[in-house]
Length: 228
Length: 228
Image (cartoon, rainbow over all chains, first blue to last red; front, side):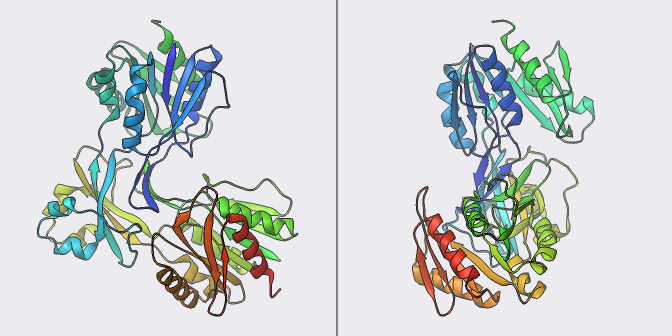
């Protein structure tokens, strides 16, 4: 099987020196990639510069991306040429539009007008005491996957922070349906430590529990190749 | 001599999953640390998780920090106990105060009032099409150094992007005077590539030029130990 995996976190530039980043070490994606490689599968890992990565392997292709726009460009052809897509990357849901000082924002009669503006500076001045940054939603990458390739098997991820299990399951199920995913890995940041990682791999009929990253990788491997 | 070096870039949390990061690989700070270690000095390197680091060395202490607040807490006692401080870290100049959707910002009669608010969510909702993030200036770490220890030798860094040399030198000289630095390493991001790094080490009487990271490390070493 040809397996496509994403790991790490995207970052969206504010200017040439600052960006908004999503925290993600890439360590779970690395383990998942290694699991599939161990079992003889071909793996394409789309990741980021700062993410931890598997060692070189004859059946592993590594591709580095930075922001959501480069992620989409990279994934589109890959989704069409792979059998299973495991989307563990933490993708930025907002991207900077315009940053200005509080005074300009206060003087604007309609804040919406500032959304048409663009910073011309390569490094935005840090003179003002307060700055206002306007952000726009990014395209939801996971929602594009089945449009690009209706045949691909899709395992998505849903990470929330400090919520009741019902809320986590509801959010995961919503993502499952909206994105026509085959499974969603549902997890809560408050249940992730250096050694433990509590998670549920679920679809509408099944729900499997894991307590560590290796257990998650094992579960995803088993369910990912199941109908192959 | 006891040498204190900072490297990498700080990141300021927006919530538990997002942050504003300053781009910095830590590679120049690593080279500077190695240069001083090679010459038998004791080095304390204050850096970040994602920065590249020197190999273990009997005379090297590594300390990891995350944001400006943890940087200041960490540096204060260290500045007092070291002879030379080389502050190559890219420090965030703004930290998030409050993030909300565009509607709440538009409805606010006075945007200043939103600066009193705080996000209660651990992961801010990504439902709205547009978000507005309010940011506040962080304390200037370099301005505190000589207050903490008037005897320490201080080499600061000034990075601009795509500016004329006059402007770069003026900004560096301003930092030199305002922060009572002994030297400022002035550089322009548009003149930094994978293999080259154009920079000037200057004070009010001298100006030395370097074209690569090893040359910069050599210059900083020579001028750093000069009056020892």
